[in-house]
Length: 101
Image (cartoon, rainbow, N blue to C red; front, top):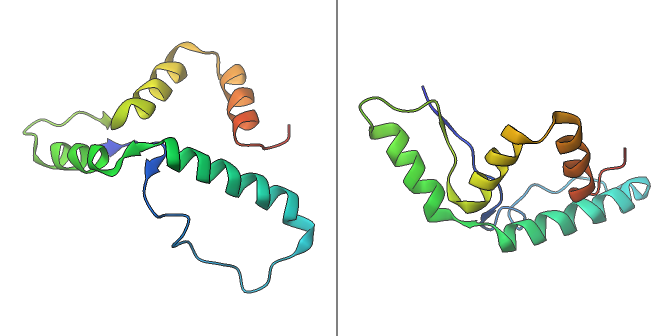
C-alpha cells in the first residue's frame, strides 16, 4: 500500500466542483477566502503530470515506498512538516488558507 500526497495541482478541480443547492450569505466571507486561496494555489500548483507519474510509480514499483510526494510544492510541504513544530506549522497553514484561529 502506498500514499500519494499531492498539494495543489494545476487542474480544473474548482471549476468542476459541486455547487450547493442554496448559498447562505452567512458564509460569504469564508467562502470568498477559500475560493481565492484555492484558485491561487491551483494556479501556482504542480503540473498534473507530476501526480500521474507518482501514481504510476507507486503502482508499479516492486517494493513501493509508503509515501510519495509529487512535485516541488508537495516536497517542500513534506520537508516543512518534518522540521517545523506542529503548532507553528498549523498556525501558518491556517493563515495561508485564510482560516481564523
